Amino acid sequence: MSVANGRALLAMPGPTNIPDRVLQAMMRPAEELSSQPILDLTGSLLNDLRLVFRTKGETFLYAANGHGGWEAALTNVLSRGDKVLVLASGRFAIGWGEMARFLGADVEVLAGSWRAAVDPVAVEERLRRDTNHEIKAVLMVQIDTASGVVNDVQAVRKAIDAAGHPALYMIDGVASLGCMPFEMDEWGVDVAMSASQKGLMTPPGLAFAAASEKALQAHPHATMRTPYWDWTSRMSPPLYMKHCGTPPEHLMFGLRAALDMVLEEGLEAVWRRHALLAGATHAAMTRWAEGQVLTCNIEEPSQRAPSVTTILVQGDPSSITDYARTVCGVTLGLAIGDLAGKAFRIAHMGHVNAPMVLGSLSAVEMALQAQNIPHGAGGVAAAITHLSQSA
Image 1 (tube, helix red, strand yellow):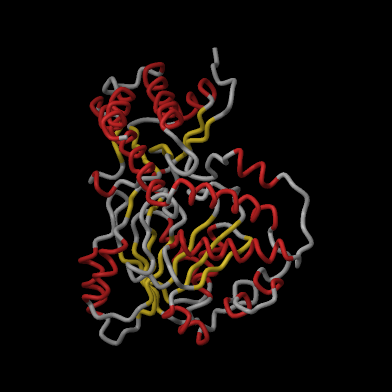
Image 2: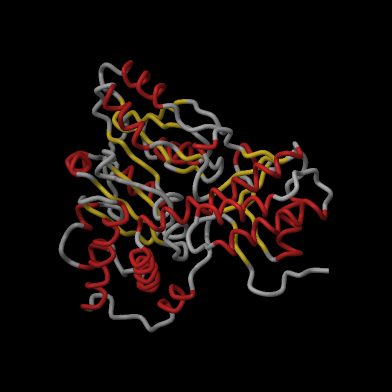
């Protein structure tokens, strides 16, 4: 007997739950593409993206997904043949590096673990050996949604500085922007990118990039530049050039509503909410792990992401994910990359509150009981205790 009827709940790491306010903002007629309302909307979005990235640099908006944001970041500052150092900690930095290689970069991967964050000491050591400064950029994700790790952006910046290396520092913030602290200017990030479908609560289809002054100085010399992604064109006054064609109006209407929600709540409050809900998830996972079948993929608690938790399973994780979806109406994230078929993921990012996260955890615990999967009892109770003591 299914109890899934009712409003379905997404507990997967993108696309995330879209607020009604965002959906309603999109349910309107189109505007003339070069009209004053669209001009004003474009300007307000680019300005408020600066607030979210915490930068005084330039921001850019693209009709694209996160992979498009990767390409925008790479092509605007790099040249074919440039050496790029990719800091591995799961799937997505590797994917960004694969794109850089396809575009003509010479890519080196600094090996990492699927179960731990990037080691700043190893980064400093590798850059110190690059005495001729052949490495032109360092690529890292702040949160890898496949492994569930959070990397320390500030610590890696300090490692780059300690090595005295001039490489551009480039960060993927797809799963972190709007979910946890990100201080682009304060932490010395040169290029950052993100997308709409996770912490920013908007349907997939928008990608964002932000550029420091150092990145803008590198831009004119980049030979990877292509017309669609090009910052020079998008910084020119005509509205048509800022979008390289027709603006993605309805996604922009939605993003405007989403950014209004973020700024009304307060960015720091948004970060705190995500930290609390992640803590509740980790408390439940710690209790479940007592059955020695489930375990958190990221071993060090301080390195667990505030937006998604990846859970390793001895056996077939589909017995949990299928049950949660068909019986409870909760869609959990499937594992990808090296963890495919070995894990599942619980997202706690974007438009989420305590009842939503507790509902997702309850569906997991219900599946564990129904499927007779060994686990420590009281995971949801531990999550409630965490929130009652912390919220």
